[in-house]
Length: 165
Image (cartoon, rainbow, N blue to C red):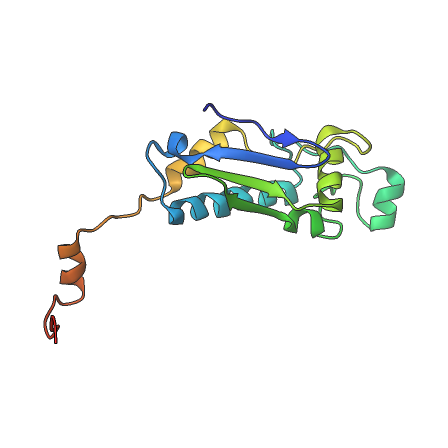
C-alpha cells in the first residue's frame, strides 16, 4: 500500500494511513491512538491558524460573510460554529490502518464543499501530505516491550505469591 491522499466525497471526507509503512514496524494500539491524536492536532491547529493543507492562507471570506461573522475578510479559520472541526475523528480500521474522518451528515457535506470548492470557496483544510504524516510517525516513541522477568522485577517479583491451595 502506498501513501493515500485524502478522499473527498459528498458521503465521506477521510484519509487512511498505513502505520506499518510510516513507522517501519507493526504499530501497537497505543501508537495508533497517538498517531491519530497528533494528526488531528496538526490538522485543526493548521486550519485554525488560517492555513490550508499546503500551508497557504485560505481564500478570503466575502465581504458579506465577514461582516455577518464580525471578522476581517482574511480571518479565515473554518471555525464559525466549531462543529465541523470538532466532528473530525480517527478510528482503527485494520491491523495496521487508521482512518481520520469527518463526522457524518452536514459536517461531511460542508467539509466536502470546502475541500473541493463545489458550492463554497475552495479551502482545502482536511488531510495530511506524506511528509506531515511521516513527521508525525517519526515523533512517536516506540512502545517499550518488556519480558515477563522485567515486569516481575518492576513489581518486586513473586514474593508472597502462593501457587496452588
